Image (cartoon, rainbow, N blue to C red; front, top):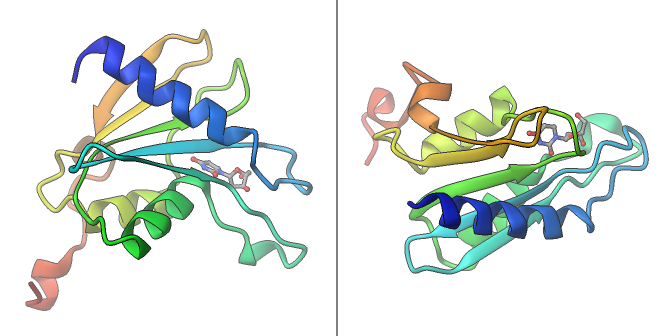
Length: 137
Ligand code: THU
């Protein structure tokens, strides 16, 4: 992906952030998942009064994409509050890894200064536990 494409996907994540339901943490997060068919699935965090029932932006995007029949992903962008570096949490890394067993999924976010950084899910979750360990797929 080009730097322009990374910025475009981040803009989608920033737009998705407006829909976050985060009345407890007040930490609104948006995600934009670029699917192999070229479509972009947005997600946002959805918190709950029963705190553990809340879900991160990355996983709402993945769940919505899978529910729509898309399971092959090229990249995900994540956007949090301005001035805060954000990276997917451990649970989201595991969920993203499920759909990128080779670790190639691109993960895009801003650092605290606002600069865009891109890495891969394989770099964020080395040695991931996956379907191969279960003899599945
Ligand atoms: N959160 C996300 O949605 N994605 C991340 O990458 C980090 C954290 C959410 C979870 C919770 O609703 C809030 O941010 C504070 O942790």
